Amino acid sequence: MEKAQRFHPDFVVLDYCMPTMDGLEAAPKLKQISPKSSIVMLTAFKDKYLEEKAYKAGVSWILSKEEARKVLDFARILLRPDPPPVHSSGRH
Image (cartoon, rainbow, N blue to C red):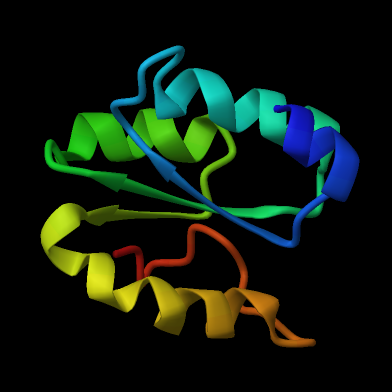
């Protein structure tokens, strides 16, 4: 959170399971600090229930850890000048 306050990142990668707080707790705090940040959350436990909670928390995309290699692809998509709408029917 301290680094987000200092740098206001354009793109953040969170893990769902983290030592101090989970990704669902961290995402809305990050969005308060830096509303324009795009957030990708990685998880080993991806399911529809977690996806819905993550999107409501401000996560732009949720990826299973098996899909982690796609993070750079999502960064390129979300950081381009005309990014697609978040939570489109093409959720991943």
